[in-house]
Image (cartoon, rainbow, N blue to C red; front, side, top):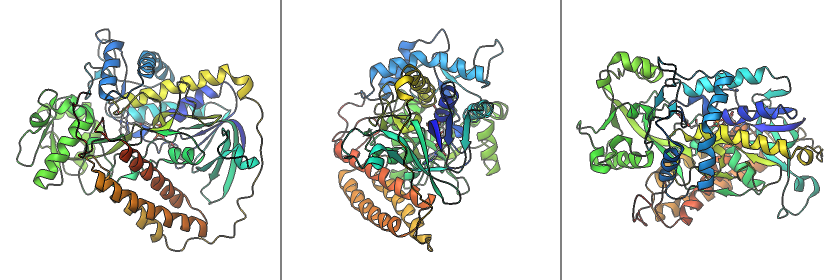
Length: 521
Ligand SMILES: Cc1cc2nc3c(=O)[nH]c(=O)nc-3n(C[C@H](O)[C@H](O)[C@H](O)COP(=O)(O)OP(=O)(O)OC[C@H]3O[C@@H](n4cnc5c(N)ncnc54)[C@H](O)[C@@H]3O)c2cc1C
């Protein structure tokens, strides 16, 4: 396969960029499951930007920087915030229907860490609405080819073709891709853009969809790209706790509308931990408070109570949450929702500059897989969809400006991957057992509250598992399940190493050996 652009992933980052890139050349989008199997499709709360005259760029910038614990790149924050409104208008031009008030203005939600109402939403189905509009727009464009059930195995770099020294500046020329029949082909492109989303599946409990196995970080790392800020994993404080619910989030916007957190004794507990901001403190603080409360009393969950808002309001404002809970026997207009924290968002990832360029030539990263400097040590709620659309424009502008050099023909060298004499794995348990080990080790040893001795144990355990996975990969024909396992094991070790390297509690990285001196720093 050959095209001008190869985009890996079909969430907000991949599809927004595909629409723009198609103005410059041919585009192949590969996505490892179905087109809409993305975190984007699950986003509930909405997308933050300055959209009301009572709000200001200064205020959004300040809230973002305050959340980021002093680790945000302030130039990046300014650029993203200032470009927010125009990119949101662009989404509306594509057909995204955000909810409006009677006077025609956008209805704006309020979320933790924001000092103003600034979150544009489509009730609690914002991500689905955005994904729908993007998919429909992409389908209308003839020079975008979309390949479902095609998973990137690894990137192809010039050194793979020429056997150049790996330490020379690498240039990416495409990707090895496995399809649903298990055949591996090469997709060559002048520009490769990683839009592979998050890494939540590294942890036992997560709000993320199954695709979130950190593939972008893993393939970029193997190709020699710089990776940063992996210690900053955001745990969402409130995922639905129910044995029949897999990965279901109770949006931040529910707390924004006045929900309170109570423990098993029906006592509101946030007053003890965050007397000023209470339930609307940033996610890390609320998640830690819940974690402490659960550990203290040895219970499996706490409760989020929004019942005082009444059935009519809840059905209208949170239709999905209302229906989902009801289907599990919980009428949220009558009783509190059982909730637990879960891995939600990775602030770190593949390091990029302001144009979305990684440290590997012709390789860009966008969306959750990238580390642009916007989030620093902690992401402000609803800033991630915003980051994806702003950077899609930046990458496009860069490519447009430099197309004469970027658009040159690349080298190609074909390998026949179908010819493999490796046998098919006959015991899937070898893979599934290790999935479980990694996710449990990460949850128990590298979770919301960390400790150096536990991190060291986790490092040893993950290293053993990685050795075993490498043996399996050498022996058997590769499958997507095996490749994802390899990727989560690599991402796990990157998170552990980064956590061990940071000898302080900062932002989302909370380590009891180094207590925070001043929480506001
Ligand atoms: C439940 C939930 C609610 C959220 N709510 C909000 C919110 O209200 N506001 C907000 O700003 N953010 C929210 N977030 C975060 C936000 O949704 C994500 O950060 C954002 O959607 C990421 O977009 P993306 O395009 O980078 O990745 P995704 O939308 O996750 O898309 C990743 C794509 O990459 C593909 N892919 C992955 N690996 C490979 C591979 N090896 N080969 C081929 N394809 C691959 C996947 O199949 C998928 O198509 C939420 C996240 C979750 C999970």
